[in-house]
Image (cartoon, rainbow, N blue to C red; front, side, top):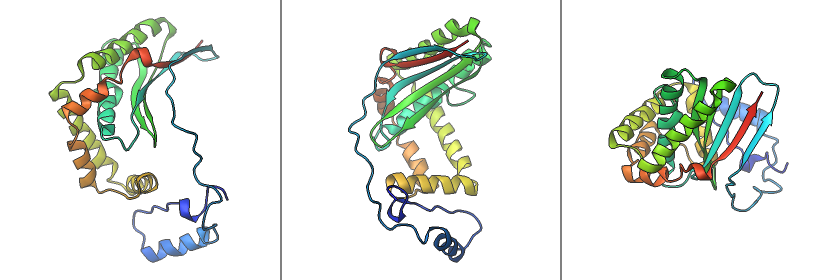
Length: 231
């Protein structure tokens, strides 16, 4: 009653169904929902990124490390640049972390990064799992790649390559009904309206070398929060 009511629910449907069928089912399952919520989103104030480090011994086979770096809220003009940098760092099989840690040195099977954007803040996450004997080398290579971005940003060639990857992933992700349904629902809930494929592509095309340079200054290892779970 305080959260799940009609004025705070988005029903997103895609695929081979008619509007009439959707309306009948919506009435069947949501017709009795309370119209207005008793309370709206809680205001906890502006989130503050905290630099910290935590290490715990657990019953695990591998050394697990998660690193978080401050990033941007989803409505920031440079938010897509943050996603682009994360993609180059560890977002695909051709990324720097995947190539240098897994493919070239065979130090870890699992290594990746991801861009996470919220209403008021965001963070970039980096994760790796490896044998304990390789932990020091893996940590060193991760720090090296992050610091390289922080100091030198990215070349125009790297940016254009990453933009092509992002556009390809966007198009492929919206090929199926599940992808369309999820994207439309998420966009409508968080930003008020869905976007077409062309609008997504246009957003990616707007990413400039200057916006990437601005965001690269957030990839500062002195501000990182690190969590380690090890045998």
